[in-house]
Length: 236
Image (tube, one colour):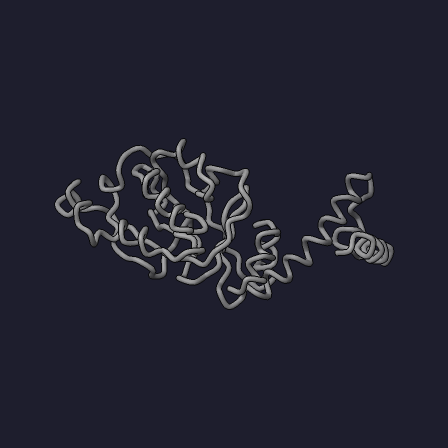
């Protein structure tokens, strides 16, 4: 992802990105069931670095496994690149935590762009105060070992029913998180930026009392003329 594309994606919504991807036949890129713990932050934008959990088998997952310096959960936290987003496949099961406040704090201090799980985080009140975006399904106090085993780092995963491949571009806002296939990131960012300019114009017009018929979509020539005039005046 280029710095220019990252900058564009910081200013567009996941809703607009969903539409841009839908135009390309991609219907299932929105991660279902996750919400931000800290919705007041700017957009989360970064390339995906993944961690996959599988169902835990009791004899493999006593509390002592965390003493293993090669434990995949711990290694993922230390290897997730600066500027990337750690995306965790927790099998859409928030009954046990994907991680807690200390590990998320470590990601933040290392310069990671954000973290997403389709499960839950423990210590969620602490994470909600962090300056790094974090998304989960709901709070979850039990340790991940009670249900999950961290089994694979940086392979393809499913997160909230969305396919995520390492290097895909992840964007999160106050509504949720979307996954943009890496090869589409530049063109989708550019198109979504153009869509946002037009939608800002439409929003202003509608709030001023104008009908959406002929305006959204702009099937009337007058709507297209008005948009061009507005855009020139706004310098956008």
